[in-house]
Amino acid sequence: MEKIVEMGIPSLKKIFFWICLILVLFLARAFLIQPFKTFGPSMEPTISDNKVIFVNKIIYKFRKPERGEIIVFRTSDKPYVYFIKRVIGKECERVEIINGDVIINGKKLVEPYVINKNDNWNMPEIKIKKGYIFVIGDNRGMDISQHLLVDVSIKNVIGKVIWVK
Image (tube, rainbow, N blue to C red; front, side):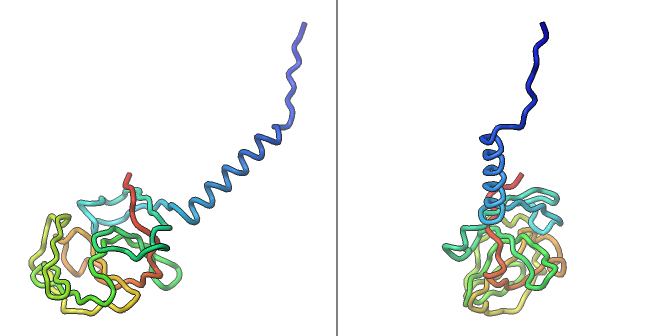
């Protein structure tokens, strides 16, 4: 005697489950956590080139970035370009670099994450505007001309790096 196997349409429960799962993943990606891939050596040795990082996108909806946090931010103009850097200075602070040392409001910043300091790094004092932060990569052994030394609008910060793979 032959068995007949019914090849029917998946149950509505399965369809509903998959729709809900896709919706949850979409919402998580849009509002909570986003992956990025790193390019370049500016954050070494903390984060190497060609790594995948995950960014908490919601944290800065409740507070501003803090000094020492690693963030992802975008440029102001489209097409957007994304960068990963460490927050060094906060709004309304004065920042300068003298012989490789970062000076915030006249005091040397202790940076245990900087392994290779370049004594040739110098930058005149700037005052960070309200609503902005100042960021630098961790790889200070590179020539200063190869680094992006900018103040970034807090509006352009995507989120805080929470995991590196």
